[in-house]
Structure formats: C-alpha cells, structure tokens
Image (cartoon, rainbow, N blue to C red):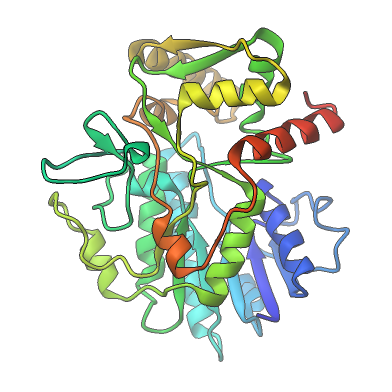
Length: 362
C-alpha cells in the first residue's frame, strides 16, 4: 500500500485517516472539491486532485496509479431525499466505475454506516448471545443479518454498498460500517458533550434502554488501513443476498465488516461516561418520548427548509433516534483483520474532551 486515494479527506474522519496513512509512509492523494477546506490536511505532504463524485473524468484522474482507494465521501443529511441517493449511491457507482476502468484496478475500501445494516435485531428463541451484547429480547447486529435500514440515509448508504459490490468481480472491495464515531474535530457529537458540560443533562431518545456502539476516529482509521491490507473481499453474490427481503440471515457477507469499540453501552451509560470525562459524576439522563422526538424533528425540518440547510435531527434522522438501538458485533473484524483496540472507551472519551477544551470548543 504505497499510493492511496482518500475521498472525503477534508471531513472529520478523512483528516484523521490521511494523518494515519501519512504516518504509515503512504503517498496520499486527496479528492477535494474546489470549495473544500483543505487546512486540516494541507500540513501533510499530500497531493490534491480537484473533482467530485458526480464528475467521472475527475475520478479517473484521481484513481490513476493508486494502490488503494478509501471512499469516505458521502452525504449524511440533506433537504431533499434524492440528494442522498445522488451522492451515496450514484457517486459511489461512479467511483467504482473509475476504479474498475483503471489499467491496474486498486483495492477499494468503502466506508458505509451501521445505518445501512440497521438497528438491533430481535433475538430468536434458540439464540445464545453474551449478556454484554444483548438487552431484553434484542441483540447487537452482525454482518450476516439481513440489512434493515430505517432511514433514507441508511437506505441510500446500503444502495451505495450494492452499487460498489457490483464491481467485485473486477477489483478487490471491502465495506466497513462504523457506528457513532467520536474524537477530535467531531462537530456532530459536540453538542452532546456541551449539554453535559453546561447543564449536566444528557438527552436520551425513547423511553426504554437500548444498546449503542461507539468507535474512536483513530481506531477507525487504524481499522481501515488494516482492512485495506489484510481484509476479506466482497464477492458479486453478496449483492443478491443483501437484497433478500426475508428474515433469514445472509449466508455470505464476505468483505463486509462492522467496526466498534468492544465496549457496548446504553445511551444513558454513554452520557454518564462523557460526564466522567468532563469531571461530572452527576449527569441527569432525560428520556424523550418518541412523539416528542418526532415533533422536534418536524420543527427542525421546517427551520431547515427556511434556512436552506439540513438539521442534524431531521424527520429522517428521527427515525434512527427512536429505533431499538444501534450496536454491532466487532468480532469478525477483530478475527479477520487482526485489529485490536489498545485504548479503552472511557480513555477515548477523556481524550476527546481534552481536545475540545484545548481548542476552546468546550
């Protein structure tokens, strides 16, 4: 893995991945839009290629001569449903096309989302699941479970996975589905940290406890590099199996990985851990009924339409917020990719809080 391309390099995860790849000695190329803020990665010896997922010619230039493509670019929220598919599905297909047409097709590692897999899974009567990976009648999600996204975002990411895997007979492909990603420079999770720091309050959607997976951005970056080198690869048959609408497990999920810190917590426990990182052992967890979550999301949607900017808690995102929980089993990745998490989750939260404070964000 000498020459690599990173799409979405100017984003939260991208900047950390670029730094990790640079530290590994890779020659890093970044696909950026003309308007992208390059300051986070410009200090490194990287090459910038201007283009977009909608411009096939720019993608052909970007992938030329690279050994590995890390596909991070995507859209998490949008005012129009169609925009999610334009970027997450069509854009991914464009990138895969450019890779496949290359004289020496690179390995493509696509970063999807746990949202593409879906929330917790209802347990079968004969299932035996470790207590840490189950809660009531539900358990964490595995790669072999039939995908069941609940939001347009999740469905668009799953469509992007399928678009990419159609090229699995022409180049090596792996798909990584992270859950909540935390760490330095994360703005999406910042408000949760701020509310706990300022008001000792943690808002918990839904009335019942549920499980959540978290991964620190540095651990995710290490994982992506490991998958590029050692990871299992997708096979074309995975596409038809993923499209199955029955409730049986997928027989072949080769090349698809969930990545998560081994410590899985409830959302309330996560808030209390953040409180400890901040130095507050008295965080109050306020449960928000689903109908209130939907009402807030509806108001946010109206404001977003007026301002022309999507809100982090839109109607679509509210479907994820009130789902049964978002946790996944990282065992396959740890087994196949020899990935280890050297730092525990509480320490990772401590490190995140330290960074926020050093930057004046918290």
